[in-house]
Length: 238
Image (cartoon, rainbow, N blue to C red):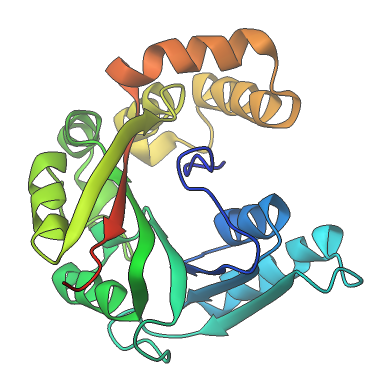
């Protein structure tokens, strides 16, 4: 389930792109497929990195000298990369999990080249508030969400680090009702028939991408989108 829209996050040939908190690889693999770049994903969870490596096998273009792919186990608070070493950085659905997220933003600013692009996505405030209201366990589970972001405040915080905001959109409207159902029936979510049926619908949509659901989600995203996605450019020094 891709959140970043590469139409607004253009990948140039030769770019070095970091997916920070890459999980099982959705964006780092998508970036690799999208452009002739070096795509690097980092995450703290070794199991997720192993899954990402396995998933990458089907997309590996080993004979394309203009593409490279790598994964690393690393802490977002202390990234093992030099200053100004990446052209693009993606941080999708990660900041809400990290206690000192402000330090992560500073690390992103450090490793991103002047003029480089940064894409951040977090859960949208009002759909997330419904999840929290319906289930305390939803956000208190290990590895769960530690905060609800107001997009305007996060945007300002990133801009204060020397970034220029240039675009925003919302994503995954069809997933908001699914998570509300999971939260409403948290203790019985694995056996609830309505949740099971909705999950089958989402899997079908993900695999087949029919025009109807693509059009429906695009029309609902501004109102119901579960994630807010923001794009920034790091300022060049004067």
